[in-house]
Length: 244
Image (cartoon, rainbow, N blue to C red; front, side):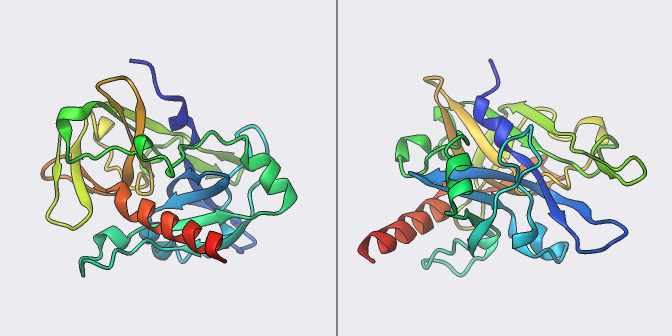
């Protein structure tokens, strides 16, 4: 089965360190989604927190072939009110600025539009899934690095596809998914946190299935935040802006 085009939009979470000797570093993975005309960059919050990263220092390219990056207007966290379980809260959502250059460039990013519920899949419904697709940037990949000696940034992605199983997790609004070859070459997939999880359904449609936040080495499964918190937050955000 051919690779979904949208998976190419998952990028490393590259950021400016504000340290003169090593001004750039990687902190995980990130990906875009949109809500109609608004574009957002999503990652795992623990990637931001663990690296003490200022969200506004994130560098997501306007186009993969350019060295221009989007600016952000504000940052959001998706928290559901019906649970005290905080695993689903491990997301950060950066809204792309509505400055003219950003608006013009953001229309070129073919991210999945979450305002259309038909673009969303549930990992807890395995009978509707044909294949799972992940793209991330494991730190153990020796080709994925910032080479300060050569003054080059060398992002090297790992793409995983296939489908073994999926199930609800004990954590609210989260699921487990097992994919073939989830840890190739013996790599532990640290650095893939913040990746988008896409599925191809039984009809061949690519859908967004959540945000990867953790890997369970005992069960060989990824823990994924379901699309529900992100969808609910963006729906409320845009409902409020329309009322305003």
